[in-house]
Image (cartoon, rainbow, N blue to C red; front, side, top):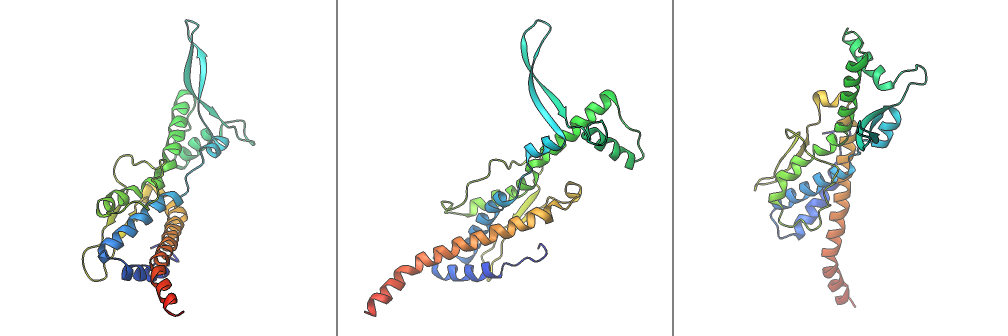
Length: 233
């Protein structure tokens, strides 16, 4: 659990909801875990492509004339230069990393390839943290009969390659528990992005689903409350 994690309010509300529902406790827990996982995708911030281009540069599509004089579209790299040194920041980052590894600096075409790899990695990482909630969503989805109230999937999150998350569904037993896991760690998380962004996103998703569950409890309880009040008059 992230530091400072608190789901006590959610658990109390879920207990009240279970008392009003005809579903089994395992079905309820899996449904709510599914909703929380989907909301966590939305609440996990994505990197800002525009901001990255402002800081380092990026890939742009330009029109160029080929040898036959025909206009063709080509993808080129436009880089932002350092204010202190007359050189692209991306190139400085590449050589600084190589310097830490006691490697010689790159220049010319080798530097161009390295810069392209650096920018490509930055843009691929934009949706990485979000995508790590997707395996949990896919695992729990078949167990949820009613998906009508679930938030839509954020189209920005796409799973690429091996799954980097998982879910452990609740079983039909006393006090069933479901677990959703984001595995954006190790070499992919050198700056602690999971703790910095993933934990708060999950807490926010849990709080949002608790509020929705509370609203549903009130809607279901209202007919009984109305009948009781009518009998008192």
